[in-house]
Image: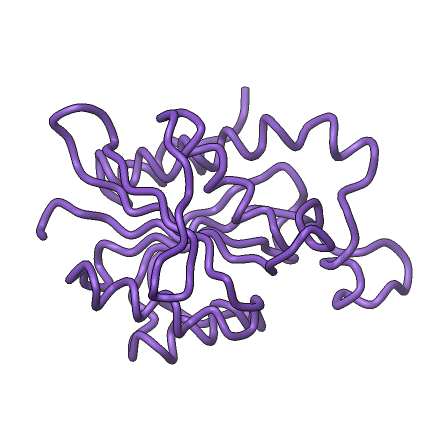
Length: 194
């Protein structure tokens, strides 16, 4: 369907990971579904899915949280794309990004995966890197902490104060991409904060 978008938040399944930095993409899916009063249901593609609309009479949204671990997210994304007949140009992947400071967002389509194994697996499964990414900044770990441990830690107490705003801003960015296109969304999201 031409006016259907697949919006996927990357993360890890289960309560152990719910509040970790790596799961910020799934937090954004909860925000998008919550705004529309819809809930997630298990889908045979290997994900929890909420079907809804951007707003009445506008694009259909398939909001998804894969049941798989981050590094093997590609299978559920490709399965959902096939099931709904959605091409990569209408897929938005929301994920954490170490190389962007906490509380910042960047939007892009295509290009490399930047060492993000979830994005790498999605590109491999889809056979192309040409999908939109909403990159949610989590920043680099302080000192010598291993980035692999950092992403699996919960957000700090001070970060948790700002996290709801960041998640809301990321959900706004997804909605802008769907409604106005990537370039127009970038002009808003990448503009310097006043």
